[in-house]
Length: 301
Length: 255
Image (tube, rainbow over all chains, first blue to last red; front, side, top):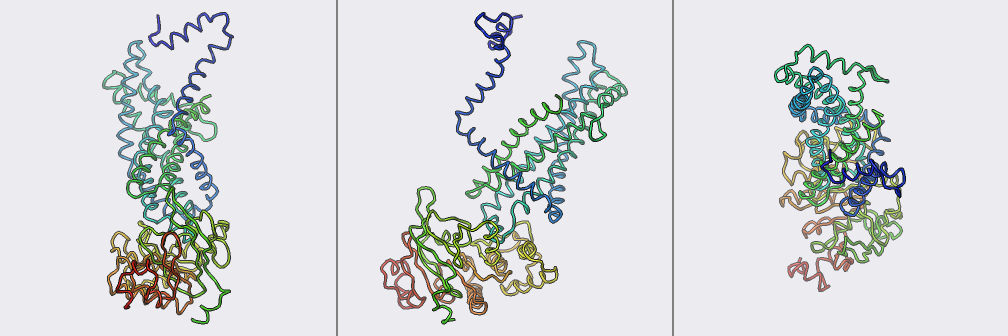
C-alpha cells in the first residue's frame, strides 16, 4: 500500500493525517506549489525566459495577420498552393501514424480491459481517444515537423538572401503576402488531416480488436459509433469530433504563426536558417502541447 | 544637368552626422554628405566601411543610432509606416545579389511592386515588364524562375525590378559585381541614361572604377566611418589624399 514515489508518499501522509499546525487547505495547495516550483526553476534558465519573451512577438504576428484577413481574396493563389503543399507533404505520414496510433491504443487498453473482461468496450475507448486527443495531437506534431519546418526554412532563406528586405523596399506587406495565406491554409489542412487521422486510427484499432482481442467487427463498430453519438452544440457533428477539430484548427494556426515568425527572424546565412527551422519545430510542439491542455480543460470542463 | 546640380536648395538626400554601430562594431562614425536632385553620387571605400549600411539607411531598412538621414528634407527614421511606404514607392533599390523572390518567375517578380502598389491593368503591366527586360538585355527571361538563371542575370532582373516603377531615387548596391565586362558596360550606360533622361537621383556603391567613371557625377570616399573625400569624379580619380591614393592604387592618378 505504501506509494513508491517519495513525494507521493508525503502527499498521501499529509492528506491522511495532516499535522495539527497545518492549515486545512495545505493538502490541496501542494500540487499547485509543486507546479509553481517547477516554473520557478525553469524561470532561472535564460533560454526559458527568452522563449517566454518570444511569445509576445508571436502574438503580435498573429494579430497583424488577423487584421489583414480581408487581404485573403488577393492571396488565394498562395493559399491554395500552401494547402496543396501541406496536404501532399503530410497525407501519407498522417495516415501511417494515425493507423498505428489507433492500433497501439487498441492493443494497450484492450489488454487491460481484457483482465476485467471488458474488452468489448474497446471501440468506445479507441473512438473517443482518437477523436478527442490522438487525432488532433498527432496531426499537429506531423504538421509541425514537416510543414512547420518547411515554412521556417522558406521564410528564413528569404530573410538571409535579402528577399524580405526587397519586399520592404517595394512596399509589399510581408504579413499579408507571406504569412496570412500560410496561416489560413494550415487552419484548413489541420482539421482535414485530423479527420483522416481519426478515421484510419479507428479502423486500425478495429483491426487489432478483431485479430488480437477477439472482439467482433460489428461489436467494435457499434461501440465506436455509439461513443461518438453525443452531438456538439454549434455544428451537428459528434461532440468529440467537434472538439478535436476545434483543437486542430488552433494547432494549425499556432504552428503557422510560430514557424513563420522564426523564419522571418532568421539572421546569419545558412546556419541561421537551420537554427530558425529547429526552433520553429521545437516551439510549435511545446506550444501545441501547452495549448492542448488548456483546450481540453475548457472543452471538457 | 549642370544647372540642376548647382542649385543648393534642391538637396534630395542628406546625411548629417550619422552614427551607426552593430554590437561593439562602430560602422558609421559621423558621416555627412549631400546629394542634389539629379545627381549620381558614388560611394567608394574598403570592405566593411559601411557603404551598403549607408545605402540601407536611405530607404529606412536601418535606423541610425544618432544623426539625421533626410530624403527630400524629411528625416527618414521619423516617418510613419505609411509615409515610409509612400516614399519607398518612389525609390528603387538594386540589391547586391538581386534578391528576387525565389518562387516567383522573373516576370512575376517584376510585376509584384506594380500589382501591390498601382492600379495598372494586366496588359499595361505586361508591357512595362517587356520594356524593362529589354532594357537590361534579357527580353526572353520572363518565364524563367530565379533558380534557372545565372547570377549576372538575376542582378539584371533586380535592376529591372528596381526601375519598373520609374523611381525618382535609385540606390545601386554594386551594380557591376558578377557581370562580364560587356554587360557591365551596357548596364553602366543604362544607369547614366536613366540619370540623364529621368533626372533620377542616385547613390551608387561600387568598387569598379569604370562604373564610377561612366556613371557618377561625384564620389564620396568612406574611410574610418566618415566621408573622408567628396569630390567631382574627375578630381576623385586624380587623388591627392594619401588614404585615397593608397585605396585606388598608383594607376588611378594617370586615369
